[in-house]
Length: 131
Figure 1 (tube, rainbow, N blue to C red):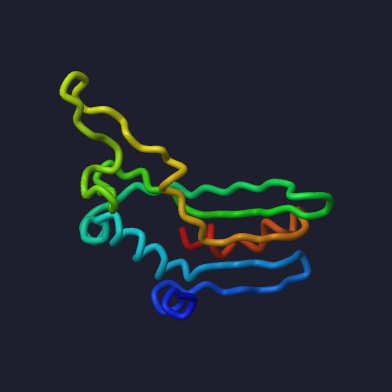
Figure 2: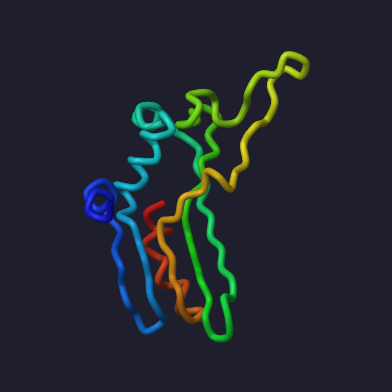
């Protein structure tokens, strides 16, 4: 499964002074996500909406995680599981209803398991510059 995944959307493992880091190829992963949510052709013609997101937490003494990724928020996105609009579905009594848990549509691009320092955020500069 790792070999197939690497051919579709490579992930790189790097050990730094701060800890272990895992990062996807930004462009390939973004293209895969856009295609999955039927936004790839739209993105070639006009702007789409995605949100950069990051989070961190203390895992135990002296060990933290910092993670950055994107969230799909474009109203034209299609749920790959149902084939319907990602954000709404029709209820007979209520009409269109918001029907999306945003946490289900967040995608990690880079993660660091290690020390939480100001320098750790520098490790994410390529991600922020890309987006």
